[in-house]
Length: 573
Ligand SMILES: Nc1nc2c(ncn2[C@@H]2O[C@H](COP(=O)(O)OP(=O)(O)OP(=O)(O)O)[C@@H](O)[C@H]2O)c(=O)[nH]1
Ligand SMILES: [Mg+2]
Picture 1 (cartoon, rainbow, N blue to C red):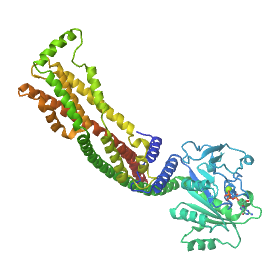
Picture 2: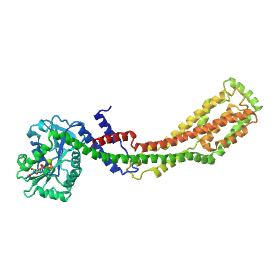
Picture 3: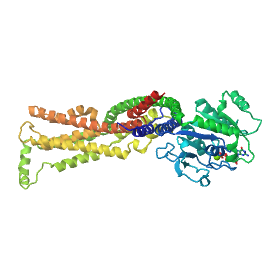
Picture 4: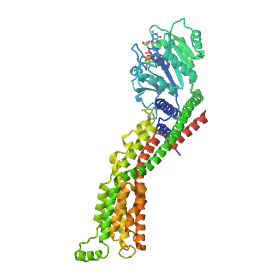
């Protein structure tokens, strides 16, 4: 049984492993969705494991967020000032027992802790790329994390990102706008989102002129179809020499502070967390459903793609036979004819009675250990010689044709899509050198097999008369010819070729028939073995493509992991 923490890690890993080939999707959109789900999931899981209520100040630059944040916390923590933007990184005011550790979900931010400091040493403007954590010992705020953030309408993309992630982390938003800015496009859009997504919020209109009434603001937003809750809307008047103390004394601010702390009372914490969680679960479920739909379409597309690849493989595997045959007809027949004549000449020489004479002549040599019979080293050499002269162009051509068809028929058009890139990776396509090595290996195997088979065959030769007039030299000659036919590409017409070759050697007696049958059997097997060998090279190429395509699809385990998390969310909703 996995602990909650382990299952959270597995889920986040699973989200990392969600893939797409790009066959049915626009990648940038898919990547954005994935990234946002991952971020929301990690925030969701962190919040589930860490009981804290996050109240986050958000708003445009220079609206007075830092000043109001200090006033709410009752300490000068975040520096406010005229430079824009003043606050450089998020600043969280947190009880010292509430550790923000490595499980903190905003992994792009480095954690910068400032332990229970004296107020005059604390004031800081945050650090870009960090979350500054100012610890306190106040039990009344133990369940709360209050955060000041940089401007959300910043020119700095980083600041806008921070606003986005802290929005997700927040259970309550304290949205600060100044009178001159509350209707500005970016902050206003941001607030619309807070409103529409239903997150609890407080809306502070800072630096408000005395004429600006709550009703006027309510009317303004109503025109934009936003029905603001009046007891969560506070126009804070413009103060001449604004300071934390002065704002704290302001009656509107005091009212806000009271309502805020009442709203976040520790006995309301759990119900509020549950509401928040339900809300987050709903938003997350919608996104996960969409992701799962897209992943399923993508996986289907990859399946279909593999089907087409398999068909291309089948046609090209037939092509191997056809191309080799054409090649064979063009280049090999005369050559083989000559080879056959050579063997036939040997056959003739060894015939009785001339064979008898030869035996007499060679007998003394045998005594000296010199024989006319070939050794296995000679055999290997001969086989090697045959192989050296083999032209493998037809096989290279089929592989080239296969690769071309794959690119033409199976590559996505989008040059940035993973499958497009996968098909063009250097190791996705076998190089000519690799193919040559593979062919050599196949021929090696074939040559070994033939040598062994021949050795087995000749072991019985001296003991039995069945082989009749065939000597090992002739048999080996025939083996070499069969080997050559097969390598030269006579695969498809081997039977016919064999009949022609063997005809002069088939004597009328049963021995001749037996021998020619045996030779045919071996030649056929040679043929099948070589054919299978060549196909295995084409198959290796196909498998590389298949593996590449599958690496761009999402595994069933990953899908299952996400689905089961989706069920969990369903229970929360
Ligand atoms: N006169 C006056 N100045 C104010 C008031 N509220 C804020 N200010 C000033 O406005 C300036 C900006 O205030 P900050 O609190 O730094 O604003 P911010 O929203 O945190 O700004 P960034 O961190 O840059 O996003 C500071 O110089 C404040 O002193 C106010 O009610 N009256
Ligand atoms: Mg600030």
